[in-house]
Length: 219
Image (cartoon, rainbow, N blue to C red; front, side, top):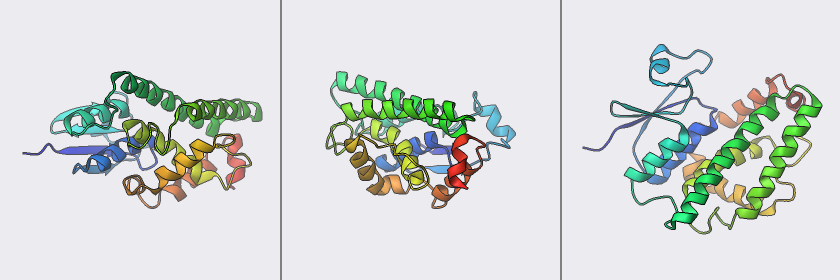
């Protein structure tokens, strides 16, 4: 009997999208249930130790944290989306963690109250993008094969693409390989179908109502 997977999600969460992309790439059947993080159901709080999404239900078992969920899905649904070389695999895991840090900086940037705070976060993100630029091979992070690290980075680059026409700076400034990489990821049907159709517009609306310095460009 095939394992039943159910993913608990919030529509705008980029970390959930990482796991949806992995499931799509693996062509694994799954259910997905969306919850409101501002009004979390009691049943969700009982199963999520951190109160965050994603949560993956594997039968009666509960997994949380997107990187852990993706590692599990990769291990039990071959072939692997990791490089075969152990050193490259370890380096990919390190860069996945690095990309999670950029997600955090992006969230902080969106909610920064002052221009100085906003500029500090922007500078840190652009510096991070330069570091990724130095690592990427193309057309994907490691070359011709799509790996878990691509599933991890894609949601952030997608959000940069959603908002590029609103903001007076370029997340891809000085990083032509990262720009090409983002455009390549955007074309993949497994990534395009990893979000509900209304998410880009709802994300713009979210940016409009952050109350931060950056919100001025979305009015």
